[in-house]
Image 1 (cartoon, one colour):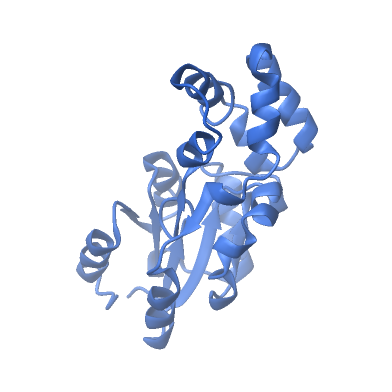
Image 2 (cartoon, one colour):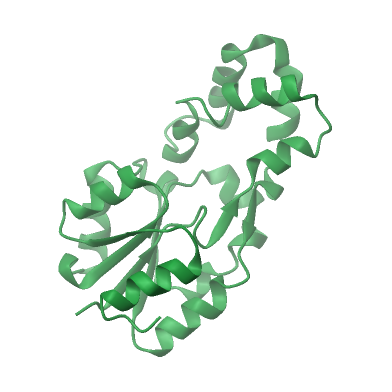
Length: 201
C-alpha cells in the first residue's frame, strides 16, 4: 500500500523554463546556444544545486567555459525568477492527495539562489509535508545519500512510497532503495500510473 507520494519539483510541479528566460533578453540564436552550453548544459550546473560552492565561484566557472559571453552570463543569471513557473495543477493536486490521506514530500535538485529568486513559483511548498532541497544538504540526486536522508528524516518505509521525477537516473537511484518510481511526463499520465499502484490521485 502506498502511503507517501514524493515529488520532484522541476518539470513536475513546476516547469524549468531556462530557455524562455534566456530568450527574453533578445540574444541571437548563436549566443543562446553558447549560453546554454556554458551554463545549464554544463556539468557545473549541478554545483548550483549541490550548494557546496558560492554563486560567484559557479558563475566564474561558467565564464571560464566561454569567456566571450561573460556579460550575457552575468545578465541572465542576475535574477532567475522567470526560470521556474509553477504548474496550475500543483496546489490542487497536493491538496487532493493529502485529503485522501497521503503524505506528500518533495525531493529536488535546487539551488539556493533559485529558491530565493523563484519563491513565488514555489508557493506550493507550504502545502506539503516536508522534503529536501539539495542545496540545503550539499548532496544531489542521484547520490544515494539524498534518498537515505529522506527515508531517515521522515521515517519512510520505501515500499510504501512512490517517487515522481522526469529524469530516469534519479528514479533509478530511488528504486535501489525499494521506492516505487514513475517517470513523469504529464499529470494525466502520472495519475494513470499512480492508479496502477492503487493510489487515488
